[in-house]
Amino acid sequence: MGSDTTDIGVIAGIGIFLAVILWMATDAGLDGRLTQAAVRDSAQSAREETAKEEIAPRVALTFDDGPHPTYTPALLDGLKERGIRATFFVIGKNIPGREEILRRMDEEGHLIGNHTYDHVEIAKLSLEEACSQIMKTNKLIRRITGKNAGYVRPPFGEWNREIECGIDLLPVGWSVDTLDWTTSNTAEIVERGTKNIEDGDIILMHDYYASSVEAALEIADILAEQGFRFVTADELILE
Image (cartoon, rainbow, N blue to C red; front, side, top):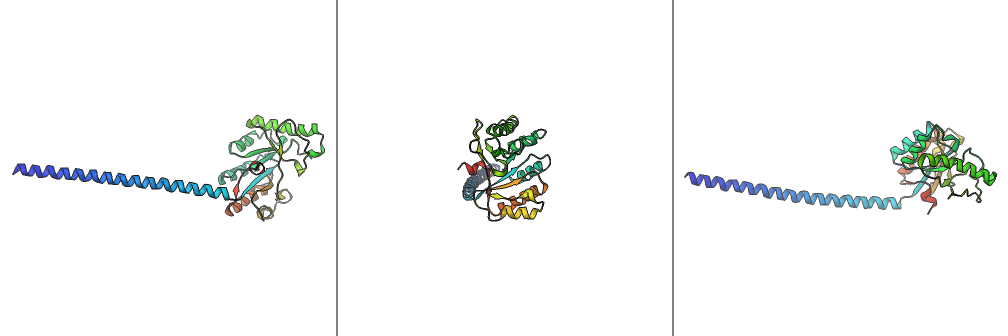
């Protein structure tokens, strides 16, 4: 009688053990299937997101005259929060004492361009004077970031095609002028910066006024809502 009881207990124990093993195997298989499905879903989402980015209209936000000790960092904070890369055309004489701002621009993926040293009408200068304005600023940018500024926005938009200065240099204009330097009315600036914007537009602003920074971030939010993707200016002019 005792032996029969023992055998029944052993058999029952083996049955429970096998049931546990079977459950674990089934559960592991289910987890595996769920994991594979999650990977497939993630890959599909990534492909769809990439496709959306490839067909999304692009726009470049560009800022002249900085760096400003207060407004430029505030603008950088807002752009970073939104994951936006912009283009900054800096004035050489505004750089000393604000080197960390330029370093931050570079580290956060923004494009740094040249806006001359003294914000001069460069097309009216001799070639020697023009190159001095460009190279003095370029030297400061290179010293801080380790990179040459290969893009220049001539103040007032006037450029002399004979200016070369011994470096690769591309002038960058704009297709949308917000005229933000003429007013502190944020609503007016926003309207100019969001009205009839098209794929490939380069928007001109300045990071030297509080109203410009406020308007720029509002413009960014509106255009993002409309499906625009923000790029640096070089991505549009090098096509």
